[in-house]
Image (cartoon, rainbow, N blue to C red; front, side, top):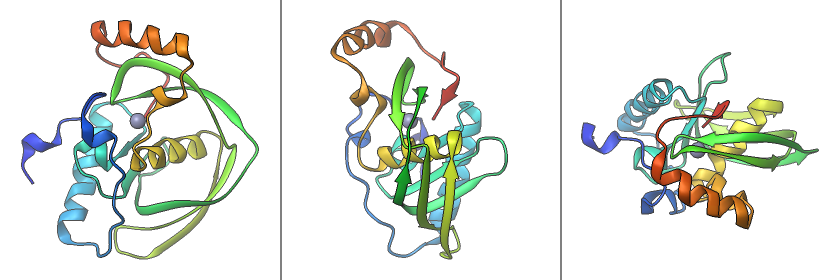
Length: 170
Ligand SMILES: [Zn+2]
């Protein structure tokens, strides 16, 4: 992997809008790529990052809300309940915060970087972050949750601002 390919991609880059493919077999480069993704997430002071944000359309996400790093392959939500609304930011949409309604509690299945099955439940912030990252794998961004007025505002703000102004950056 070239280092130049690992800049965080921002709104307007087509890689963010493509649906990511499932990882059939975990190769050594996937593990290396997980480390790079985690590095990018920490450097950007984010708490989650999906592979398309690093320019790769494969179903891989990293999440760390402060109590350990998750590296997941092919994450899939199999059950959800309740709802929560948080003001979310995205490392790929710098300077923009949007209220997003998501499930309060989820159960997800995935694989870890060794290919072992993961079956876990998450709630609150952790559940929010997983849902945000899984959206990325479907080509979905927080701006898609914005109202018409918010979208107009985003167009203006996005030209001027750089960096994160939100509490939750993913
Ligand atoms: Zn994001």
